[in-house]
Image (cartoon, rainbow, N blue to C red; front, side, top):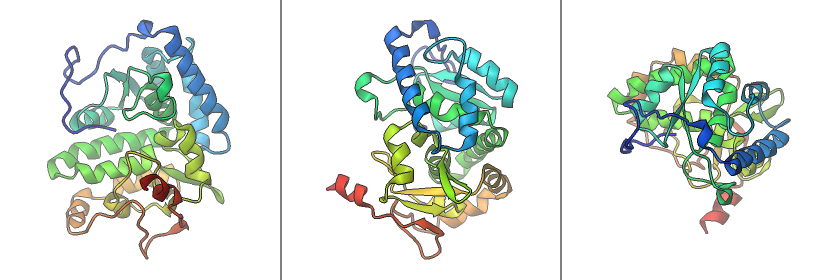
Amino acid sequence: MTAATPMRPEGTAADWTVPQDWKRYTPAEHALWDRLFARQAAMLPGRVAPAFLAGLDVLRLSKPGIPDFDELSDRLMKATGWQVVAVPGLVPDDVFYEHLANRRFVAGNFIRTPDQIDYLEEPDVFHDVFGHVPLLADPVFADYMQAYGEGGRRAGGMDAIDKLARLYWYTVEFGLIRDGDGLKLYGAGIVSSFGESRFALEDDSPNRLGFDLRRVMRTRYRIDDYQQTYFVIDSFDDLLRQTQETDFAPLYAALETQADLDPETILPTDRVITRGSQTHARRHSA
């Protein structure tokens, strides 16, 4: 997601954007994108939300390898009015929200190295574009992302960025969605990760809880490992409705009186879909 106060690198515009400079990518970098794309595209059917698979077509562009953001933005603009803009890395929260509120998605213009194929700390072009862009072609999810950005602009004046960031983390990055009697992936942090795509749905370790806006915004999250809890939305329409209809100012005020929750916590009021064993988290913290 974002960093609170990174220094703006030399050569970036006031809004932190930079030219993607597609021609500078090496054949090896394009080949790594193709390898990552093929691996995820083969593994996700049956696991990912149908809207994500439909949106993958927006990434099948005329050039091989890493997508050209200009061409990608042309296709997205026709679908939902969104565009992709290049940034050199993490950007400040206010910049991030301003771009989202104006239907611009910021994407890193660099790609991981082969030794980082399964994990990297800072999101790269594969995470940002493969993970996020397909759902920006879905009209409802595209509207949710804009609504989230507008909420972020307001949250900055209420000292509530940390609470709102949890909503992004547990939906846009690591969300699950109901699909009939089962669950599907939609969060970009999951769908761009080979290991977590399996873990989030199939492992008995994590909790899977029904989405509740207030509950999500009280819950801390993991940045160094797979999540200990995933929240399950009923639909993108419901997620958008809750975001647009909630008055966040009194919600932020109420949250200030309530303790934050650890990632593995289950409350008596939770809608528990799966009560996790937390085996993975215990093994990796030992």
